[in-house]
Image (cartoon, rainbow, N blue to C red):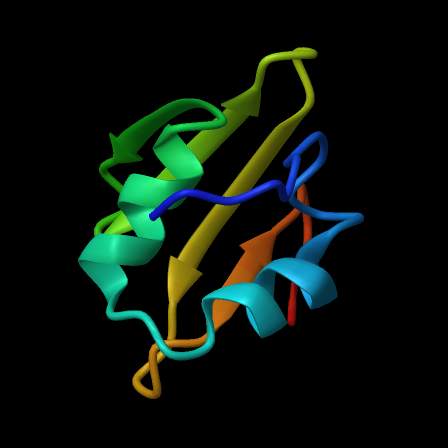
Length: 80
């Protein structure tokens, strides 16, 4: 999946990322995100949860809901 899209901050770019990746399955979404930084699985005890760190050091926690859409995690909240 080649692209000129540059992922700097997953949270602030979430709407553009969602639009860009809308037709991809979860594995392809994770592969694309991993190509732009470091991604690791976090044991949340809830569902498969991920921590992403961009090449600039900006971080985002997220998981996918039942429809395959991103749900982002903050210190005391979740948001789409």
